[in-house]
Image (cartoon, rainbow, N blue to C red; front, side, top):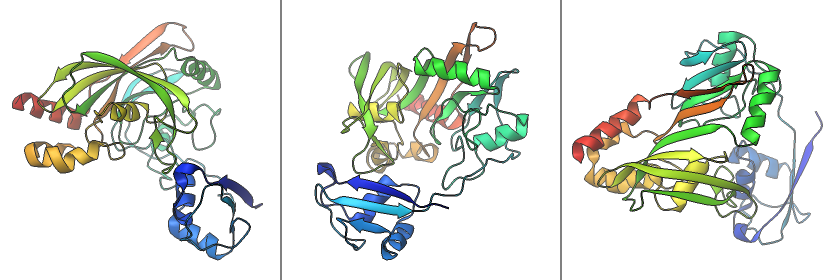
Length: 319
């Protein structure tokens, strides 16, 4: 299989990072041990020289990475239970539980929503690649809630166009950290890859796409709030990044500040919540779109998962 060369130029925010960490940030699918092996095999050049894995980078450094592309993956049917909200010949609407990855990728080759969908209906839209059949949008692994999947290529095109035009109705519920004084608000910013951690997103990227999030306080508790959130756009990690940017991260979020609250505020003052907070408490509760075949507006609403509701009940009892 033909090797593939990747080229990177070190930017100012990446000054001083170790070479192996820099490469890991830009290639999260690869392990640091594998990257070190590539460095030892002289498959990595730093300013046209063979570097060490721990070399500290400077602004403007020129890095070449030579690697074999991975073998293409194919999603296989697996008997995974699905919570199907609606299904017809064009679409399937799913209530995705927390902890379920949407489609196979490095580190999650099986046990995904796509594997379960293929077992359930045997045929999905082929417009995605072989590991994302039928997928027109995604939810993070630990975000629960409503999703629509295309069963035909025509439905895929119609739904994808609505997502691209931002005409899909998407409403989320989130339990956030802190007392929010305003009743509602809007966060608007560019969102792009974090300059130092490629697995994360940032509201202050070097390059990014416009993201707009509207929020409304449904219930204020002593140290937390229940928010209803509506999206104008659908960028990766948009809600989590935007809420963290206004200093009210999603409770339990491991990447954007919500996990720190577990180690401080929750553990010290609300230990009774700890058994129920195993993930970011974010739930996609409403999805509305024009049905690809009937051309009529349809809307689906699903209640929060059991862990989310348990935290709400605990907060109600403490207020």
